[in-house]
Length: 51
Image 1 (cartoon, rainbow, N blue to C red):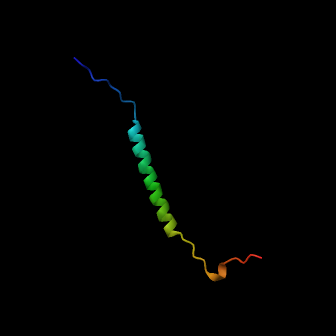
Image 2: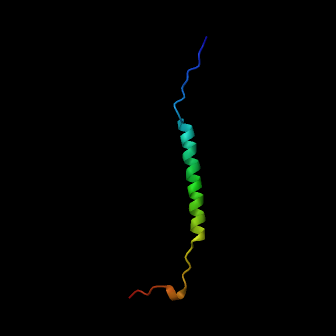
Image 3: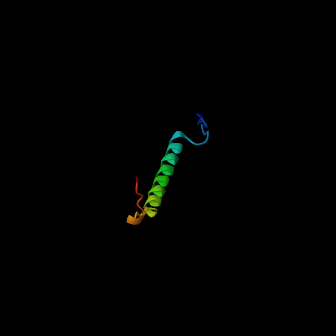
């Protein structure tokens, strides 16, 4: 009989790569949302005058 080799040593390279890509996408989306929500509005009275 042929026995299947048990080669389960945790996460594979493919699973870790997918996890990294998903994490990076979530971080990028969060950063874009944060940047859009926290835009600074500069009014003419708050512009610094350099001498």
